[in-house]
Image (tube, rainbow, N blue to C red; front, side, top):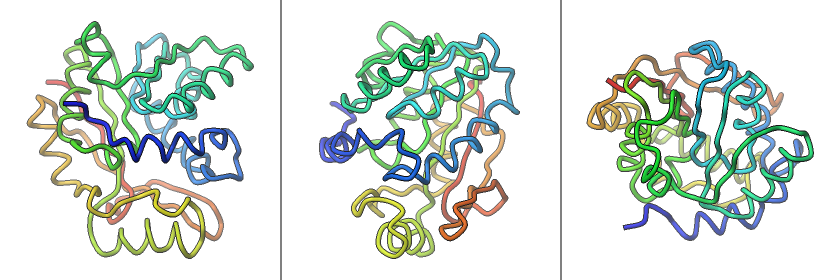
Length: 231
């Protein structure tokens, strides 16, 4: 069974040309991307590390990790986004491999192959996030690190990530998120443990819709970032 939501793929395919527009539909991602990349760099020496960026979209995080010296591969089920990522990497002379594939497809030849797997802002867009977390862990070598981020599931996250971000401040296209797909941190931690992973840390990510500034904190109420290792 494919772990793909075709409506989600179409949603991101339709706005693929916006990936590298810092003032476009992906502006919030451009703001938080340095935060995410630096967090990962602070937790692991990325130089020459073999990294898989699952659900890489147009390559924002993938390129940032490459710039830190990592050997990065990006995968995404949305073909138009992968095409944009390839063009942008080639234009900027960055040696990054991109594939229009899912984690379930790439694991066939890459089980236990990566030092680091990232899966950021992806879990809330797939039918079976638990299965995706398990696949990401399987892609890691023993002791390898996994970085996950998604949105908490509570009334505050509905008001902030959907009503506020999509309808009041117009930070994201309407329909970007579905509340039913949000995941509580405790549940995501369970997914990680059930997959043979060990939770190390969870941090909140706050985005100010007025100043367009972002920071990490200990408030897991809405967006949060989690990392762990394969036992």
